[in-house]
Length: 73
Image (cartoon, rainbow, N blue to C red; front, side, top):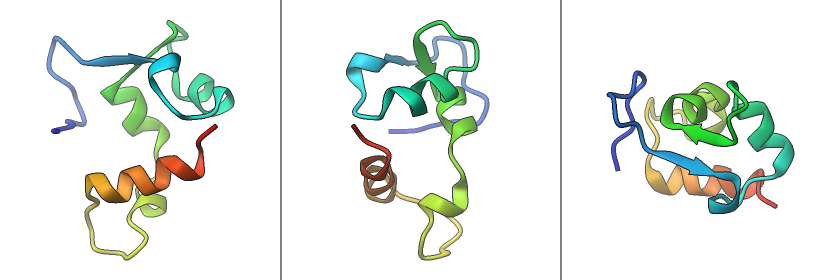
C-alpha cells in the first residue's frame, strides 16, 4: 500500500462502513463531508507522532493498524 501526501487522480476512497474507526473520528476526518475518506483526508487527520510511537521517523502499516485500533469502534 502506498499513500501519497498529494494523492494522484483516481484517489482511492473508503466509506464509514468500510472502516473500523468511530463515527466521530470519521466525521472529523471527512473534511469535505462527502461521506468518504480520501488518502489525503486520512493523512490530514492523523498526527504522525501518535502513529510513530518509537520515533523512527516513519511508520509502517503495522504501526498504522495499531493506531487505528485505538480510535476504533
